[in-house]
Length: 426
Ligand SMILES: *Cc1c(COP(=O)(O)O)cnc(C)c1O
Figure 1 (cartoon, protein in one colour):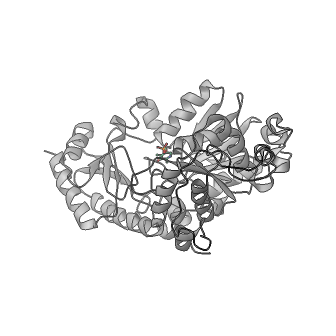
Figure 2: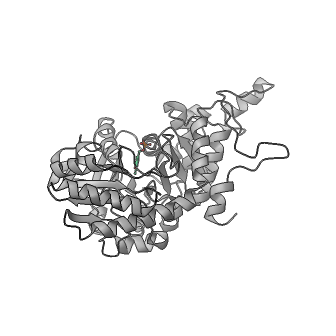
Figure 3: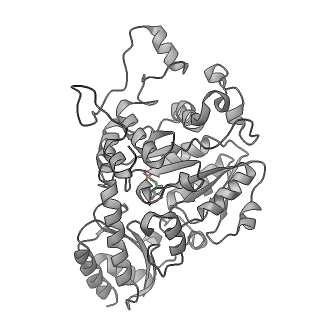
């Protein structure tokens, strides 16, 4: 299996003679063994196998292997949400006294995790803006820096990171490069090809694609050498809960994914429900058809918005005039930039409200990356916990309206947006 579309449909599950053609839902917390010794070996990681769904489940495993294949990684861990994926991934390398670096233009929930919750646990986050230079980023690094975090396409700032520049910094200092690939998905962008070491996903968005299941994943690129790297004592010191196991030494190139599962998931939980893994796998079967359609529809909408009299500015990385187009062209297949558009509506918050109320086809929902088109005004919803100053830092002006363009016929989407823009100025 070489091509992405084939992987979307077939990776992770090959039925044996007489077995179900479709991934079965193994809705069981527990797994049966004939002897206590076999069970003990599983607990000690001497053998691999299922014993409790918090640690692993066959349906979740199909989802994990499909995503691993699509991203070109070595192993994945299914999580209950995108936030759980990022939390477990960061805690896999950090403890009190550690720090991380992150682009400031990121998803609102992740911003709060980094800026508030992790700080309370003694993990400092040093933010840098999308325009920060190599030197400015390097100046934030010290001996306790564990990772640099970026979103492949920032939600909702619609910025694209310079993967190669960040990867170069990470390589030079022996730091892990972590990318949230939610909005581009491996159909458009494969961050491991550009130097990322760990990918996190909110499968809640395009991977599912039908708005049925909240979920996430951590994908291990298997391309980071923890062994002997002094930044990572958690990977180099013996772990007493597994009889002195040293993850960097004993788990090969899957050390990150294995530790996230047998320590992070074991202690914190936040596993995916098998039913949700099934639905997400079903969604992934059409990912390679949906992402180009989302991108083509969104480009058509962005072109209409650009130059419209009720629109002050448009951000869509697939638009050739966009500031981030050169990076999209470099890192995204066909410069496809997904269905996410941000634009500034003339008249600020009151016009944003009128615009949303006038829409008929596009729904007002918190969700994005659904097959159906939707709209959101971040400053009054997802990002309302942020202060005016933090909104600015996150690249979210008050008049920013976020569109998540679906896979309906673009003529209908455009007609709805045009009539609502008209209403917004009355
Ligand atoms: C939605 C989202 C998340 C969080 O995912 P949940 O499944 O809602 O927890 C993380 N990152 C990005 C880019 C997102 O859009």
